[in-house]
Length: 80
Image 1 (cartoon, rainbow, N blue to C red):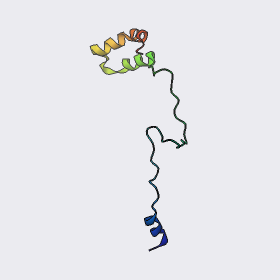
Image 2 (cartoon, rainbow, N blue to C red):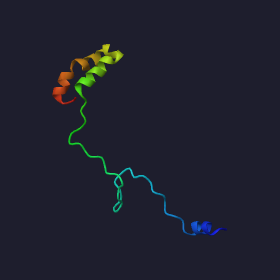
Image 3 (cartoon, rainbow, N blue to C red):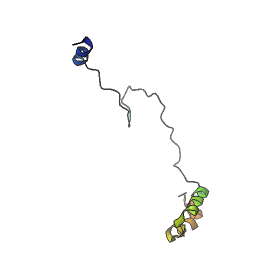
Image 4 (cartoon, helix red, strand yellow):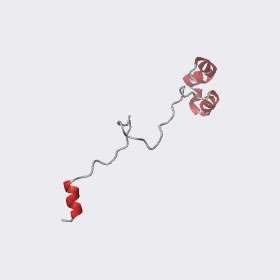
């Protein structure tokens, strides 16, 4: 058998690196910076939301029409 085969059988390489999806172990450095956290949650733009609702065909439905009519109230309540 060639020496390289014996070497691999006798002293296998450690497991290949796997992408981490959670906190990295101590001592492991990232090569890309983590995404910055925003101080406030995402808010939809009321105008874009309204224009999107108007373009939907089932806007004639009562529950969707109620949302469309009450967008200013939802903005005041902080939902949009």
